[in-house]
Length: 116
Length: 110
Image 1: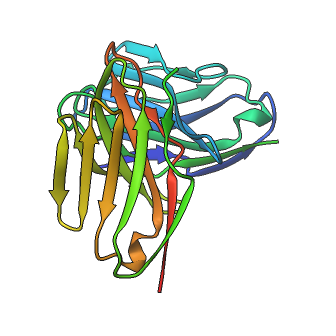
Image 2: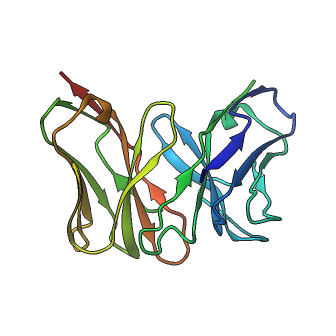
């Protein structure tokens, strides 16, 4: 089944404790992206990757890191989480840049992160 | 940054038609996506418009006017399961990120 998976789905942690949220897709997509979704603010892009070893900042990259060592995986790293990073996080992938033709993004199920 | 505006909430009756509007800044605009998101779930793709006009997909249609910076999603024969948030997202040139609106929460009532 074609899908985007994220782990963990739920995480409660404390300020300053490094964490990684994994994202994997099995559709051989080139483009992958991380979003956070907050009430009243909608979906905001954190980082995106056009292909292996190519990553770029989105709208809200501060406090986050990503890597794209292989095509299928795009982990999101919070080196020193803070309470303002409490949010719902979505990973997404698409065949290529979402703006090309009707290049829909497929979203993972989401990770609800709480930083105390 | 680019602003995408859509109403925060709408309510409509089962069996009726509802139109959800979305406006965006036209400078550098490429195309516009609509996504549906049920509470607690991931967004799912509904449509992508790049040309002016109406595109129909079953009960859902999406319209775009490039010159006016305006799009709408039209939902016909509303069903209770259509209660969800509807997100519009605009793509702009220059490899810039997709810009999402804050979403319109639609409640379908009996």
